[in-house]
Image 1 (tube, rainbow, N blue to C red):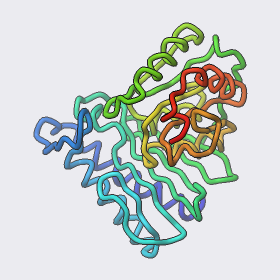
Image 2: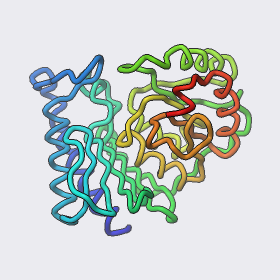
Image 3: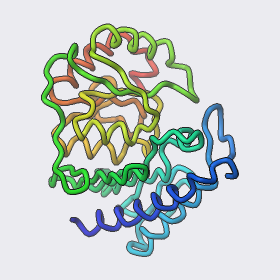
Image 4: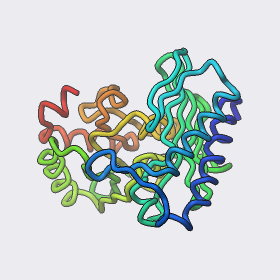
Length: 266
């Protein structure tokens, strides 16, 4: 394992253990509402602190971009952190959430770790070295037809300016795939796609910490990731389409007629 990935894994497991120990006291946690349907708990903040402490102890000169504390430092190395992706699920006792950590070097994601503390599943990738679930090498699915495919997504929940376009895409996919799923953690959705549990995925309005690690997991497992127009601006726009090499272009083709200007330009 790459030394930097090893540190990311150490940080993810430490945060995951803290989250897991908190599941029996959810009703007593301090929770703050950041915006409509967007919450942060004391567990999010504690997990983020553990991750940052672990990373900076190993690499004190590296920069940080974290969901709760924002940006700190300047460096060619940037750690992109979501300490608890799926906070709403966690607060409801719904066991679908994860720790997501990615390392960006000179603008390119090179390391990724997504850890599911409920199942002790660790998804990792190093650029050029493949994707793994625990010790098992992963590959995306080989399905060819959209009609046979299972597609993951995430419903809009804080921003609704693109909801009409999203619903039009959803309506068409319901009729032209074998099923749609929305468990509620984009980081885990992308990891699951890398593991062959989905054939494709799309969502709008995400943040870099939601998807940075998961996107490397997919590409290193042989999949494709883009924005909704097929470009590579997904980390900036937050609009994402992913799939195996056969399904990805078919998803883009289905999505294209429904895109509004905001989904094309941002």
